[in-house]
Length: 352
View (tube, rainbow, N blue to C red):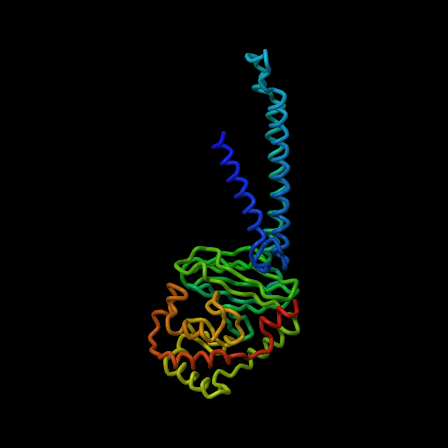
């Protein structure tokens, strides 16, 4: 008896911890706090499925309780066997038809929403962004706008934004829980989905397909701003001058070091299609480094000096450059001054 009590006590503790921990996490990284059309549709499906499962559970438990009470062993009737119901056609039809009905209740809205979210009829009149998944970062190319960014995807609120997605290496999966469901990325065929944010804000995204050593660190952000602010951001990004000279002397030296060490060969400033590494046009406006680290000068310097320690398996660890700590600090000064627009993640969060 004591052994069973211990197990029940442990089960109760684990159940309580699950209940408490279910409230942890970020609001903008949860499918249960939808902020877009796709995520709201997904939550509706979750609620329908949950309702069906609760209904089945309650019915089974009620029947189970009735059987336990009604047909329990009674004193003086230890050898009594209740009437058996093998081959009862009515019961067999009932417990076959009811699950079919429940599955139909789940299937109809699921199929309808699946086709709705896959609808590309409005793609030609909407903003299109080509998304490329890389180990272990994300690249965004705005069709027809001559704008490229990495890690931060800016979109206007209240509008469908179509994402045409491929991968440059292994399989990845694009997922912004607060805005929509997941979409896998393949190297050979392009998959398309759309996202739509109802509210301004910064929404966290994840890679939902195991893709290598730093899969868990392959994060990105979707910055949703008003249509007017988005238009201003587009104009600012289109007017970026890659050769513009920074204001401070250290940043100017950092710009020269950036060029001398062939960093520009992998990282573009502006809309360069030839870049093989993350685009750095608005690097100074980001709030995270490498998708997960705090965006500070010290972290940037540490990244330049030893990127492998911060994100194992990244390709920059194999890059051919050689800088001192002091030179890395000056390059960091230059990168932090890459702030072409007043429309930033901070402004999006302020307007939430």
